Length: 305
Image (cartoon, rainbow, N blue to C red):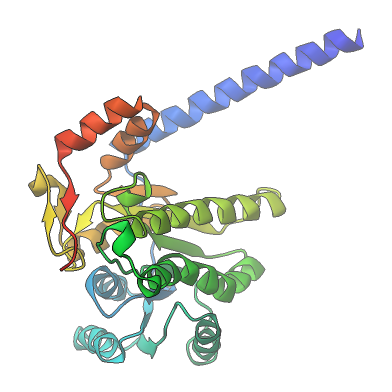
């Protein structure tokens, strides 16, 4: 009788699992046609790394225009202050600029403490800072490899360690990580950049699951990882691709879509959004079929001079 009961209970668990999977698939389909209401960020304290240029600058401006208190971090003090001043010219005074090398753990913690004392606890952390050196693998110097890894992935560890504790204490907050579609495949001249962006994807998944486990699924902290296709920030100076009109975005457009993804609590989002399903589909195809698709899209980045 015990064995029969155990078997029946196991079958019931399987049936319940299938029903839940079906429900969440339907929920996602509905979400495509009826978008989730965007939550307000007016009372949030948003910290953006790499705010002195490109996507980071536009993210800072975008959040400020929505009424958030914005904290700009960048290693370049001059451009970071320029971002702050542009926001102030919009009539917003709740913006702050701090010079910070996010690759340096001690500096991150030092400046984070200053932020806490002068502004308050960060409620939305946007890890955007990133760099790239487009070179063949054997041409990458030790310094270049170290710099890319330190800025593109290690900085996420340091900012999370600095700001996540207050979010956990209040059971409130949102972490946004700007990865790249390069997280899904390794590309020529991206032997350092692509792995760094894959690591961002894995880190966000692991931290989310860890909080979910230790809080017994009661954590209200949200995590959003975004994967832009190609944003015209100037880092990739020689992009060549088919269908460039639907694959290239301005920093302003990319930032707007990233903010929308955060405000709608998406866990993952490609920028533009339609690429996510394609990327996951490519991953499960046979290798030769995947190569055919990549060749058809013809995405290439020439090496830096």
